[in-house]
Length: 202
Image (cartoon, rainbow, N blue to C red; front, side, top):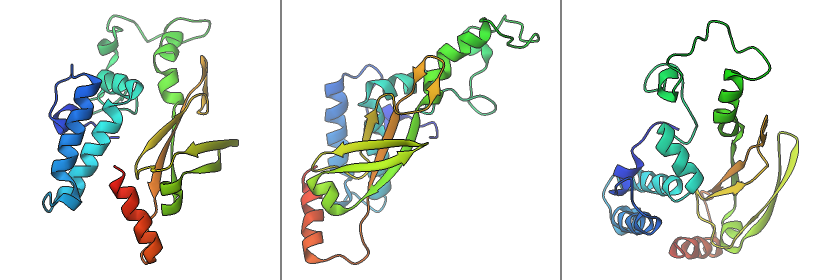
């Protein structure tokens, strides 16, 4: 996920409370919602607003974003990626490698192991499933996963399943499931009514 200023997107400061974040999201979503006549770029702007809220309203994602400027964990290499000095290792001599039995390798494992073990997937659901809720069953990396999605699930909504991600030295990471509501090109009147019900439930 590219570096973005989610605070600026919602028009809030970094010390905003959860209630202030929620209020800002509602205000911006109402202003830029495509169905409210928010302008030609309303759909793209609304997606940015929703993405910002999904990150800043989740304590774990917000913490990672505040530290690294992204929810993908630390970035190395060019651009705005952080170097060793950014993490307090500026005076450490890496020429000897990481070796075994502790030391700098364990430090990196502790700092980044959990972030790297987090797994993100996208699941596609139908309009009836989104409106009525359903039990989803799927397989990720050889693991059978079950996810109960509630009635009124929104397109782009994310669910966090603890201990269902990749394994790392300190345990097992989390699985983040993003839900995409598939809208058929040609839908019946009943499906259209269900879709309107889903939109109005926001």
